[in-house]
Each structure stands twice: as C-alpha cells, then as structure tokens.
Image (cartoon, rainbow, N blue to C red):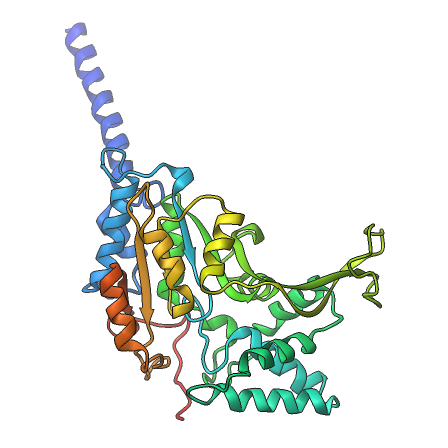
Length: 359
C-alpha cells in the first residue's frame, strides 16, 4: 500500500507540474509572438479583416520560428520605420515645420523677415505642385527658427512642444497624434525580438524630442537628417570647424543647413552606415521611403516585408498623395510591397479619438 501511495503521489506531482508548464506557455503574452490569439490582441487597433495585419502576423511567425525555412536570428531581425506620416501625423504640416512655426509666431514675431519667409512657405506647401524653391525655403525657415540654440535645448523644446494642442484636431495634443495601430506594430515587433529603428527625413533632434515619451527608443535607434552643429559656450558658436578641442564649458550649437540628409537613397546609405545590418521589414508612406522599402524587401539573406501606408481616410485623418496614387500602386505591385489602407484597416487612428476641424 505504501508503494501504491508513493506512485499515486508521484503521478499527482507530475500532473501539477505539467499543468503549470504547459498552462503558462499557453497564456504567456510576452515571451512569444507566435500565438495568434495573443497577436490579435496585440494589434487590437487593426481591423481583424485586414489582409496586411494577417500578412504581418504570418511574416513574424515565420521569421521567429526556429523550425521555419524563413527563420531569422535575433541579431538580424531589423525593422525600419519612417516617422512623419508613418507613425505620427504629418498634415497639415509636419512636426519639424510645426515647431518652427510655433516658435516664430510666439517668440520671434519681431523678426519681420523671418515671419515673411514663414508665411511664404506656408503658402507654398499648400500648393500642388509646390514651387521649385520650396525645399530651400523649408531649410531656411526651420533652421533660422532655432539657430544659435544648443541641440539639447532644442530637443527639450521639441518635447515640450508636443504638449501643445494640434489646431486641426481640437482636444488632441501633437503627442496624441501618433498612430495607435503603428505603435502597436512597433511594440509587437519588439516583443518578438526585432530591433526597431526610426529612419526619418526630419532632423535627429526633432525625432529625439517628438518621440521620447511615446515610442521610447534609444537615440541610437533613431536616424534622421543632421543639422550643422558647432562647438560653443552657449553664447557663441564661433568655434566652427577650427575649434579643435571641445572645452569643458562648450556645448553643441545649432547652425543653418544640414551635413547629412535622410530621404530617398540617403535612407539606405544611413541604414547601412549606422546599423550595418540590412533590415527585413520596412514601413513608409511616400516616395521618399521607396528605396528603404526595397532595401528590406529584397534582403539577399532573408525573406523581407515592405509596408506602404495609404492615407485614404479624409474623415479621421487626411486623404493625400492622390495624384501619385496610381503610379505608387503600380510600383507596389511591381515590387511586392503591401499597401495598407488607413481607412479600411485601422479601427482607430490616433491615441485618442477626436473630430477633425472641417476644411
């Protein structure tokens, strides 16, 4: 009888331990992204009928399953995302210009020449197509608005600006205007051991300040254009390129113009130089992202996924790029990019619901 009791007790212990082991595995929502029910909960702001949601789930399951032919080691699971119009609203004006306009209107209104340039620029970007000199005017206005400020002070200024109300969405701050479905996607990829990078045409300081409380990526995973910086003591940037020693009281001061851009092929160069590993997933929303999409899609070592967001929801956000849409859709078909309809595939757009001001 003693032996029977021991056997019964041992079987009971094995039963309990098995239940704990397999039960925990079935309900774990963080250790693995391969459980479909878990994934559907994770991407809850996506429409369940979204073909691209399913494509994302299938892709991630495939590259994270060690038994799959498409398995990708953790160190090579690189994903790159554009910022403006991809993870945060960029209309009516994108963040880099919005913060410059705010500073000019509220703190630099006595500079009549700069105010005139700002007004002219706003008129230009409302045109379709924009005048040829719009690009240089953007550089001039955004640069002059913060010329002479230290880069760290600018990042703090940008972060504070994100608390301002966005005029076309009453009740929403700029910080609220990140796209909830895209933030869920970023988190989902990170939960599956992807290293996520933001690769934006905006200046790095803009990215650092705008995303710091929302995306929470380290600065080393944010790639953008580089504004001219010089060493100075906070009162002067006279050090210039001949300033051979960074003195104890020095800081980095913003100048005019850029030492590096981050659009089109520049995004590919910057990814290669900063990351050194080719991505397997990329997401953007305009032709400035097309090279980055193909850089991921046609990774020679692994399967790749390219996502192109279509701004087709004029009720909840903005409908734009309509003039280029047919050409872009043709390129998407040619290269195998997945086109995401914000109107049809996003259950919600922003972090908070809001009504857009009628135009």
